[in-house]
Image (cartoon, rainbow, N blue to C red; front, side):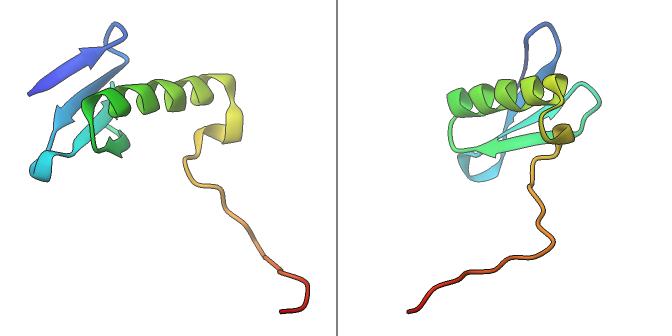
Length: 72
């Protein structure tokens, strides 16, 4: 079952094991969720972030180095 949202901006499909996945209009995956409602909500949020230029549309924040200070 496939359903398009927001005038064809993205589609949502139910996959194996009851998971829901969304894809943009170019067929590129956006997010995987446990429920259809959460998939739609997260997809809208991610697409808005891409439009606004937040994090250049990347879904993963990359770090070159990390350091944890303090005494254990």
